[in-house]
Image 1: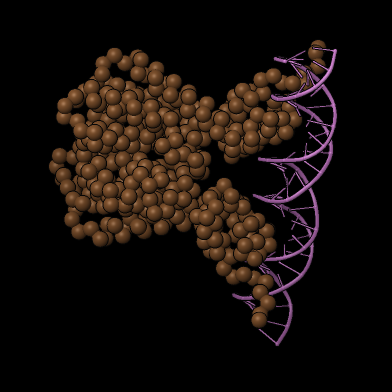
Image 2: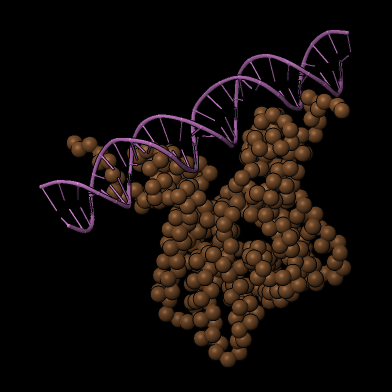
Length: 188
Length: 188
DNA sequence: ACATCAATCTTGACAGTGATAAGATTGCGA
DNA sequence: TCGCAATCTTATCACTGTCAAGATTGATGT
């Protein structure tokens, strides 16, 4: 039986992970630095060696979630061989990510700080979308058309993500078909 | 010079209005019951005669904002004679409302409690949309098609509202044209 | 091996927060 | 006019984020 060491050694990472667990269980609004510190077994001032303040801590969690989401999107791309289905698969995965982690959506967008210019998943989606559209329609697409189509599809995808959070309105399979048929309808 | 009366007389309404002013100036995260009470000139426990707790107070503000938004939407409908332009005007007004009051958007969606089933502006939009679509295409539209088209258009409209919050990416006139061309493209 | 330094953590405080109970003041209806 | 219910104040509670001061430690250079 060893007494716990003075230095935790991995506090920053553990704080982020436990923070996410806590959000999953009790929601963001009940997340407190002190409770989190106590649950980890560390003093209430300890986290401030790693995060300037609570907001910076939440920023770190945000970054973590965004990275996870982008990984999911990248995965969707790599498992997709046909160029024509790229954007659909991408959209599906985006919605599914929040469908499976509804509290992540709540968390990300419960903070005033989201604008799309500072939302990495959107940046990623946009890049892929613009590239794909140019490949699919090499001639007919002006820059402006590409932009519009991208925005529209994004709006649908992101809008559907909100739908997906509602209690049991859609099951997973219907969700996929829904996205499929909606995205195909976009013809700017 | 009369001493201030023991009973304020209109505290509930004033709390809501001053609350909104405060949100406009300093953001939701800095809104505290105590500061608000003090700024009105009333004790810190006074509001709890009118609101069960802070959340209930924020709910009241939410209701207030939603009513304003719905009024704007109704206004858009009444100023629109042609049936074919109903949904476009409705969409425009929705986006413009948040474009002109960006902090309202932040406020409404910064609280975990939004799901679309409990978002009156959406209910209103949906009702109008379904009615209009049936009028415009009396035969060809199945119930399912109407539903899909409504959802898609809503997703675009609501998605664009988020775009409109970004600093100076779109000016008002471009915004209107943008919505116009995007909504017209929906053909489910 | 040792001293030193920066990173990390604890203790102990502070002001500010939401909330409640107990009591004061008032308007209003019977 | 009495009394009740709504409204407001005072006093207090537990809890929060945060910081300064000091304790503990691992790493680094000599």
